[in-house]
Length: 295
Image (cartoon, rainbow, N blue to C red; front, side, top):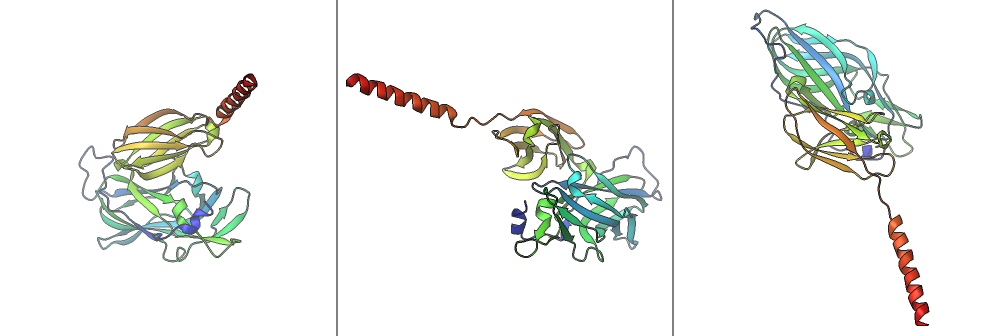
């Protein structure tokens, strides 16, 4: 990861998503004066070879295009390790009653206590240009209905969001976030277990030969892919520890609001070349015997 981060180009400072928001609690028709409830969560697409990506989130705001301006949804002022927010682990950045109507942007106001930690414990500073002042901008197209709760998930792609500065030795990183925003009610999930758990497997959800999203199995081999649109996915499963053959699971259907079970995925040990070597030795012995008989 530390090497591949150098090659990231075209990083977006503003992730744009136009989506239709779906009513989670719409059993009855609420009054037009009733407030909507806007909840914002954060999640992460994980990355290898880095132990921690710590980001201080001071405030989260949403902007109304109805003339009401900016509304503060939460002021957590907390430091989050983004790499903890995987396999369905979310953190709620804020929740607030707001007027119904159209909202077109979310902003994360960051603090200065941001860092990257490698697996050997080395700590690097993580710079966030302009994020302390104007904030990280995520454009949305959200129409909130009165009296309804909406949950918006901000999914960081850390592997594409970290840029190394300067030449080696590296002194720090710059955070240029690639963020996918999605309405939780408009997505489904895929869950499963990879064995052996010691393989520390990487699981990729594939659509039309393109990686849609990625996660890693936890210490028990369990995984959960979240934020999936309703369509058919294949899974590519590869070990990051040990010598195992990759595995593929094909044709998993995902429906809105539902969890699809991928079952237990077994990674088989690689065969290597040991058997071939033994066969070669036997052939050599046979050749020697035949030569001896000729003599």
